Each structure stands twice: as structure tokens, then as C-alpha cells.
Amino acid sequence: MPDSRKEQFRFRTKGYALAVVRFYCALPKSRPEVQVLGKQLLRSGTSVAANYREASRARSNAEFISKIETCAQEADESLLWLELLNEGCNIQSDSLQWLLQETNELIAIFVTMAKNAKNNAE
Image 1: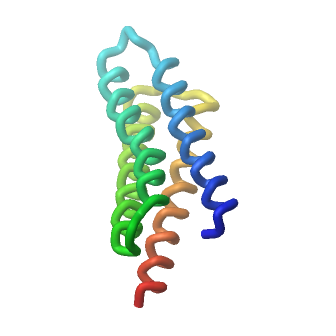
Image 2: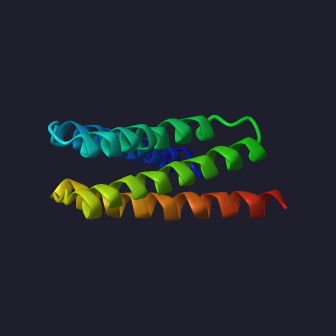
């Protein structure tokens, strides 16, 4: 990935993490089940950006692939918490819809990045 695209994607993943933090802060504090799911989302959602930063500084192709696959796993876990908040706790908002869409897009990008890196290694 060229440096400018790499920097744009770092910015995008950081924006995703910030959106997760803001979403968590807006969740109802009076519902313990929402807070539990929200904390899980907070952990996995911010981990996406942290792991992408680590991937962008990988010392080998194998390390890059490992970190990118971790990004995909954390994003997929975030998707689960978002779906549970939406479907199980009836949390609905524009920010939730945006997070669902962005999470799906990030997963697709990470999976493609991992496949491309594996193909390039062969």
C-alpha cells in the first residue's frame, strides 16, 4: 500500500476507534447489559486501530499478515457486539448504523489485505 493510502487508512481506523468511543459514551448508563456489551465493543473496536498501527510497522510479511488478520478478527468481534446491542438491547441510532457499515467495510478491506499479502509472499 503506498504511503499516502497507508496514512489515509491509519486515519480511517483511528476515526473508527474514536466513533466507537463516542458511541460507548452515549450508551445508557442505567442498563447493565448495555454497559457490558458496550465495554466489549470499546475494547475490540479500539483494538482495530491499535493493531493496524502495529501492522503498518511490521518487520516482516508474516508479521504484517498476522496483525492484519488480528485486525479482521477484532473488527468481526466488534460487529458481534454492535449486532447484540442493536438486536438484543434495542439500541438504535445513526451512529450505530454507521458503525455497522464501517465495520463491515473494514473487515472486507482487512481480509483483502491479508489475501494480497499472502499472494505476494508466494
